[in-house]
Image 1 (tube, rainbow, N blue to C red):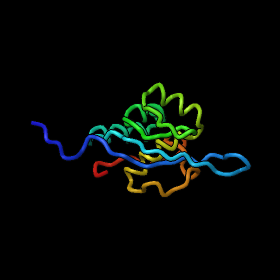
Image 2: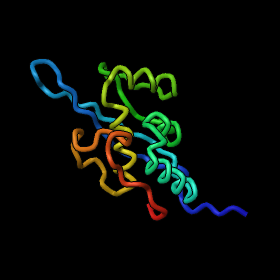
Image 3: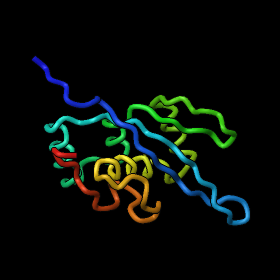
Length: 133
């Protein structure tokens, strides 16, 4: 018998600030739908993070399910792994912001922190997920 206590995924908000024309900041806002990991999966992820054996791409392969993201012209960008790779190549720093949104959501921080404080799970010391997150 399987007991389901929570939804299998959750949404988190995020953003990326880019330098635009004449030094004006342009903000790319997004919503990301992340897979809710089971306790055993969270433990495994925490071990991999501690060991440094997972990078941002692998982390997002594991947890990112969907997004709400618009192009510079305001068109909705459909999520697929191939499109994700293309978009992350085009917008430097966006991949790290998706990783940040994941950990911020797990740690109850939301979107409060600025882009520059912890750019990536692989270049900073992220807080590992816990069984209560």
